[in-house]
Each structure stands twice: as structure tokens, then as C-alpha cells.
Length: 556
Image (tube, rainbow, N blue to C red):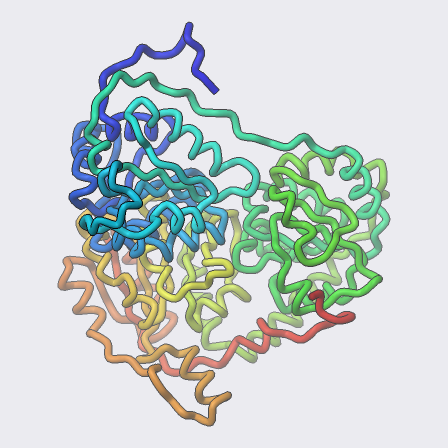
């Protein structure tokens, strides 16, 4: 789309770097997480020029920059950006970019390049990598090269639009070392409208009829439902339908609502459901693990037209933004659904039974998580990790609002938590953010404590220290005859480690001590706090995560 010539701002001489930064600002991106390097020198010169409007948060490793952008995007639901050099810089950031893709997070990656005339010639330039564009293309939804300064505003607009159109996801813009500093007359480009498919009214009516006639409806929410919390709550109340949220779906329905369920009770209800509404979820666990049969019908709501039929053909597929689709479904549904008897007492009874069972099985983890929940405000954010506490949190930690429980989705990559939480806290300085890591995962990005101190980011990082990759060690103990290998760890004194950077730090040995440490950390808003919690082996939560089928056979 071309800007309106009558209202467009006049062209001004800019470098490609200046034009890119200016366009990012016009699209609401006011922070860049970045690590400098020679291929991006002119980009950082532009960042200096725009320093009163564009914040530059420099990290100590490229993965830290990318994870921080991911955390900012997840916590706000808005685009966030990072910049790194080509080759090793790109590859160091690639795990976070892959995670952004798997989580449908709007992360914009600015990647440097070798001289444009030499791309693809394999001459051995500094940081050259074979087919960099091809590597990036597999990690994002939109990727292109900025070849001229005057192209930058339009390409930024296209990248930002791509991140919100259809299935959301990351985008990348690359620019060669000799192009960032080139100057030319540049005309700003207005933000492009997000592409939304036209609602299929026939499919809406079919879904309404199915749900209206259902005796035991159920709703399954994934990350795509995070922006449709109000609509999901309204549907749940209208249909008296329980709402399952796990990992990316937590917080769509307030955990205090008896209809808000996590994995174990969700599986039980799946076995009874006759119609299930899946909202922004791949439903892999349901189809592959819990099973399917002829007595259950599926209605899917997804932004990606290819997703609903990937594993199991649904009875109805509603394509589009979940909020818009569900809002229309709420308008149509009353004509096909009569008032239902309350299932509230039954849900409360089931919740209590499962709460007791989980409490008996993983009580130690619940004690620590209850301490965190008692101190974390309702709108405070918890960022989990691939650790014993993280697995338990996905099952039992109460989540009250959307985007306040950040979990890494199907990549489930160890070490994502601390740096991602740092970005979430930087973007949401109005609320406390807590990162829960094991000693193994924390050390992946522990160096970014320097970034937290340098930029006064008030993140509270809890490190549960058992001296091992605890989940790996348990598997070796239980499934491989206690033949332990590569699971025990040598750690620093975490309190002194944090203090050496200038961060506040203390050690908590009981849940009550943790509550006090959290109160002190939340009162301190000018920098980070690390709380070490020494622990032993935890009881396993896996029997409540990997549960056998409850109906038919798994969908293949």
C-alpha cells in the first residue's frame, strides 16, 4: 500500500539505518534489545541519534537480546525488536527466534549482513554464513533484505503487518554492512492494515448449533486465546463449559473461577465431553494423548486456516482472530442454546478433589508456589522454566489475568526463563515479574544479570538450587537403573554471584522466608533481586502431565 500523496510526510534524507529506526518508532516499537558489532555500526549510530525516543538495551549475549524481545512481546502482546550481527550473532539468537515462532510471538529481528554485492559468493567475509536468508526464513513468517534506504519504511510496515496477520509470529529484516549507512530521500510509510479473513457465517452458525445442543461442552484454550479472555469467559458462563488452559492458555479464564481447569481435571472432562471448542490451540495433547472417538465433536477457532485439519478434521472450523470470531459466536449462539442448569457446584467439587490429590503428590512444590502467589499481585507476571517448579506451576499455580503466566510452549527450551523474564519486566515496569528457574536453566543466561543491573530492571529471579539437572537425574534414576551421567552440576554461590554484579540477593530456606524475600524484592524497583532457594529432589509431577487416553485411541 502506498502512502496518500496528499497527506504523506515529505521525503527527508536518511540513512537506511535512520529510516528503519524512524519506521519502527512510527509502528510503536520504542525499545531495541541489541548487541553491537561492526556490521551494524551505522544502525547504532542511528540509535544514538534517536536516543531520546528509541531506548537501546544492550545485553551481554545475543541470546539475551532475543529472549528479552520475546519476553517483552509476550508480556504486552505488542511487537518487540532485537538486533544482532550476522553469522554467529544470528545463530546465538536463533533459539529465542525459534521459540518466538513456536509461541506465535511478534518479535522483529534486525540482522546485519556482509556487503550486499558479496552475499552468496562465499568469499569468507567476517561473520559470513552460507544462505543466511534461507536459515532465517525457517524461523520466521516474514523475511527480507533492506537493499535501499527508501525501501526501509515500507519493509518495516510489511514486517509489522505480517506479525499480526493470520497466525501471529516473528519477522526479520536484514541489511548489509554497506547499506545501513547509505543515504537517500526517504518518505515515511503509514502502518498497513492487518489482514483479517472474512468471517464464515455458515461455519459460525454450524458451530453455534453444535455448542448449543451440547450436553457436556468444553473449551480448550491455547496462546491464541490470550487476547480473547472476556469472550471465553462469556462463552463459558453461557454454556456452563469448563475451560482448560495449560502452559500458553493459562490466565485466559481466571483460576478463581471453578470452570478454569488445568491438565489433570481437563483430561477427566475430555473423557465426558461431547462438543469441544478449541480456541487458539494446536490441541496436540488432546488428540495424540487423551484420545478421540465418534462421540466427540470438535469446533476449532484458529487464525491459521491450515491448523484445524492438521491432526483431526473438525466438525466446524472458524478462521480468524479469536476475539472477533468469538464475539460473533456469542451473538449467534443464544438463538441455538437455551439457559442451562449451573454446573458450578459440580466443578467446585471436582476442583477440590483434584486439589487434594495434587497436594498429596507434589506438596513441596505447591508450598513454594503458594508463597509466590501470596506475594505476587494479581497482575504480576510469573515466567516458568523447564524445571521441577515450572512443571508444577503449569498444573497448580493460580493465574488471574491474561499474559501473566509465560511458558515456552512446545519448544520447552531449557534456559529460556531468566532472560525472557528480564524482557517482560523491562516492558512491564508497572508490575512485578518473577522468574522461577532451576540452577541448570538459570546458568544459560545468568550473565544477563549484568544487563539487569546496567539498565536497572527490577526483575525478581528465584533460583531453586538442587545441584543438578533435576528432571534428567530423576529420569536416569527411575528409568535407567540409577545410571547417572551428565546430570550433576557445579554451581557458584548464587547469592554472592548476584551481589558481585551489584544486584540485591538473599537466600530463602522456607516458603515463609521466601515470602519475606519477595516483599523486599518488590519494594526495590531500581534493580534486580536474586533469591536462591536450596532444595532437594522434588516429587515428580509427570504422572499428571503424561496421562493415558480416556477415550478411543489417540488421533494419528
